[in-house]
Length: 257
Image (cartoon, rainbow, N blue to C red; front, side, top):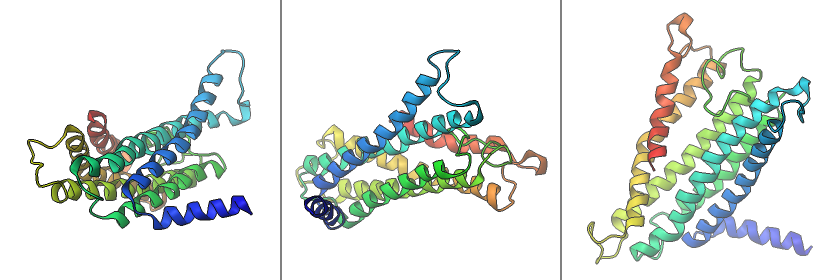
């Protein structure tokens, strides 16, 4: 009963508490948990490649190696780096540096952290399909949009998980933008504002402009896979390189951070 009470209090605190420091710690804790699962996939990859003769994956399930690479890359980038460095440290320190008591939209901030576990669950659910999503973490067509994808449902799980993660990041970015513009102390001007809020502000600007591009590319992948569109099918006039342009437009800004 004691442990059940502790879990209930934690769930109540997560849903009802909108304090920016508490939510920043929740971001960091979530990123730690997600990062541990991503590290497990990384260890599996390295053990598999340790020796040319010994294998830990059975020959009947060699596709799980591709699944491990896919989930390792996605979890590390979208569920470790972005929530921890942007959501975690941003929520904890930006109001402190600005001399503000809170971010401008505390409830939206709370909604952003609540979306994150749901998106992580959708990505992990791709393991429950028959073959798993072994398309690679970049989800390049035609691996993700044709019969070369052994499990279309797993690709859909991964895609919708990334879409929900993008919604969370977009809400957090808008929150930081308006907070830096409207809630900083009267003594702080653009010239005297510390470097950390400037870094979070510029990161939020880039995410607001680039996340819709990645979202459009992912929706086009889902449409090609399940709705018989031909955005990336060269046989019917589509262009598979188009997805690479959309995908790396986002990551070119992300890597510049």
